[in-house]
Image 1: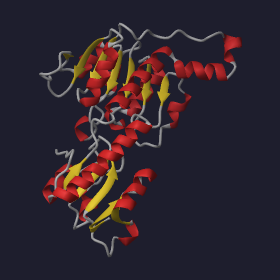
Image 2: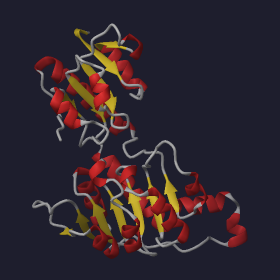
Image 3: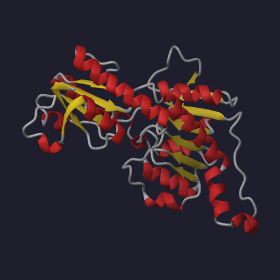
Image 4: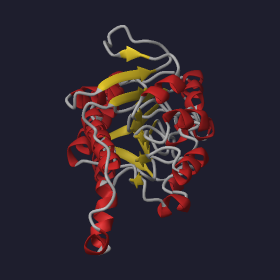
Amino acid sequence: MQAATKLLIGPDVPPVLRSALLERYDCVSEAGLATQEISVLVTTATLGADEARMASLPGLRAICSLGVGVDTLDLVAAERRGIMVSNTPDVLNDCVADLAVGMVIDVARGISRSDRHVRRGDWPRQGPGSLGWRVSHGRLGLLGMGRIARTIAQRLSGFNMDIRYHARSAKEDVALGYEPSLVALAQWADFLVVACAGGASTRHLVNSQVLDALGPQGFLINVARGSVVDESALLQALSNKTIAGAALDVFENEPHVPEAFFALDNVVLLPHIGSATAQARRAMGELLLGNIERFLSSGELLTPCSR
């Protein structure tokens, strides 16, 4: 046990990882904060850590976060306070990309909708239901071109799709077509997959103008952050069928999902399961533990993140 350094474990850290931390390190609870000095905060990409949280821990030297997202981590405040921050990138790319492909196929071919159709007993009474939309040879627009977006592009290139992307700038190492306008990308695409970072700079980037451009034969898929999509505009587009459908793994105020979505049959709703495989979560936990161990032994991090 590393008795010299005290860790504070955030409330949403998974039980298996919590047990591993308790076995290896001197960990304290929220109730012990008044008498304990915390050097390392263990949190998640969902909960993160804001400046108020950092200020409440005057001895804090490192924040180790489980997950790839950094939009809930105040990296500016951390840098100003001399606090190092790590996340767990790369190890979840495959599983998030796999889910994105599944969501594309589901929303286009109506897999979840058809499952509900059969379970209700509607097949004998109404037939097999409405026709779906072909995925292969379609036009795929990617919002973002980071690690996960690149993996999604690699997966869906196997479907002989024409792929273009929008990001803050063109990537020199990416051979795909770059579209400087998100509206133009949406207008071109059959499927618009959101795979960019969250945070203030991308809040409601997918707005009513983008959805109007996507059009009545276009599908929106979001595996990034709920904040990137204007949910009110999306609900209106789905209700009015000004877009064909949507598949969502993330929401603005998750785990709370607007009930208006529940009545719609042209949307697939998932409980933020992008990285929710045994393999990905194990690798994420191992990387988080590796970051803590590296920090305690050398003052460095395996996967530091900065603003």
